[in-house]
Structure formats: structure tokens, C-alpha cells
Image 1 (cartoon, rainbow, N blue to C red):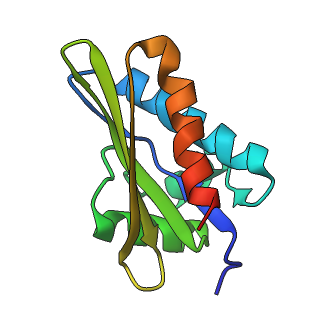
Image 2 (image 1 turned 135 degrees about the vertical axis):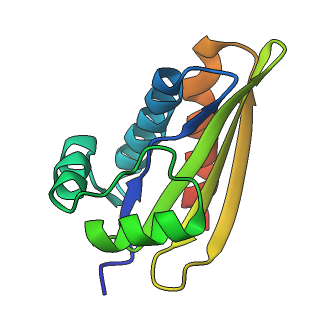
Length: 133
């Protein structure tokens, strides 16, 4: 069983935003998790390498089953999967924490931003909540 602090962040899916923008925001979340120094976060290039070796297609992975399968391949305890949505002039980030061993969504987090410039701050707020558990 991997260490409890071993985590990975899957690329978010975009809803009414580009997939590239959603991927950038998942990178913001990854960076904020690393900056807490509480987690061992798998970096994006290592994730891509491991998943490519296993021929695993991770684009659009937001479902629990997909997150569990990905988490097992990456040897992490928890996966963070989510989405970036835009409605009118606001952005919304939704993140689910999936326990790889049980397949359960153990927590769900959300945050909003009034502009694209505030998306990094919204990710920081989510990570503060994740770290308080």
C-alpha cells in the first residue's frame, strides 16, 4: 500500500472552457499541493511516462473507476480529479478526492474565480481545505 501522502492530480476536464485551460488549472492544483510540503505529488511528466507505458488513456478521467485504475498504476493513495467550468463571467473548479484503495470519493471541493487571473488563488483555497483534513 502506498504512503498516505502519495497523491496525483489528473488533468481536469473543461466545461465551456478549452481542455488546455482545464489542464493548466490542474497544474495549479498540483503546484499548490507540492508547496504545502505535506504531500508527495507525482509530477506530470512522470505520470505521463507511467501511463503511456501501461497504455492508459487518461484524458477526461473524472469518474471514480478511472481515477482508481490510474491511481493503482501510479502507485498513489489518493487521486484528485476534477473540472474547470465557465458560466457567464465566472469560473468554477470542482475537485474530487478519490481513495485508490476503496474507490470512494472521500471529499469534494469547489471554488470559484471571477476571472482567469484568479484561478490560481481558487486552487490555493482548495488546497488549504484539503490540508486541513
